[in-house]
Amino acid sequence: MAGDHVPRARAARRCPGQGPEGRFMFDHRTSPHHDVGAGHLDHRAIRVIEKQHLFAAGLCLEAVMDGFRVMPIAAAAAIGDIFVTVTGNRHVIDRDHFAKMKDGAIVCNSGHFDLELNLVALRELSGEPTNVRPFVQEYKLKNGNRVMVLGEGRLINLAAAEGHPASVMDMSFANQALSVEYLVKNKGKLDPGVHLLPKEVDQEIASLKLRALGMSIDTLTSEQIEYMTSWETGT
Image (cartoon, rainbow, N blue to C red; front, side, top):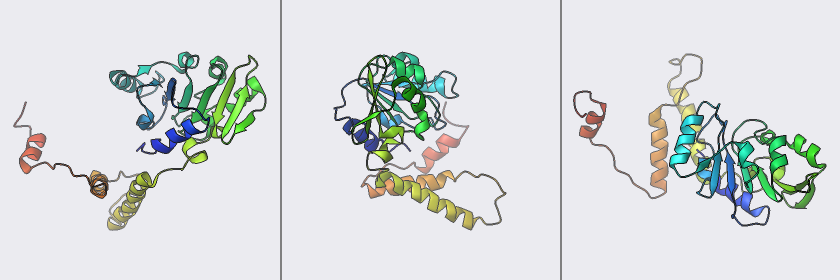
């Protein structure tokens, strides 16, 4: 789940002391978990997705159909105001991209370790950064443009905000606890290897979370279940 987008967004907006105006560039082009970053987006954003990525075509189409602009990071670098990486990969914002950024561009990482941003290359373009306020480092490029890096390029929601909210972590811990319970109950029945948590357990956790939030949903009737699973009825 990408539900920790709230502290990430707060951190990205608070650190530089600016409001949310401007073009947001969310680079989640090479994430092995292709839903990572989805909760970060609103319609001021431009999604950047790499065409070689396994899920790229589907993600691009989904983004376009949702009303987002899609482009390579090489094109986005020159027009973006705020860049957020959520890829889980290395150097997705690289030397050439930093060199193209306009004065005052804000860059942060929300997907993986600080290697998503090639900060070594950025230092080579600018020299050592200046700490202009908590969690904000200013890199002044040789062309005079300044690039603001938040949280030293580390996970922005951990480095400069409240961390993962309890409303998300409770579901993660529930998955872990019930996974252990599943292993204990099935001792001796499972072969060595990686096993997927049964869908029923995930559904139970989601149902409990909805109930805790005071929400309720419809459930399928036996006739509806039969209709969905039968080859003898329907079209």
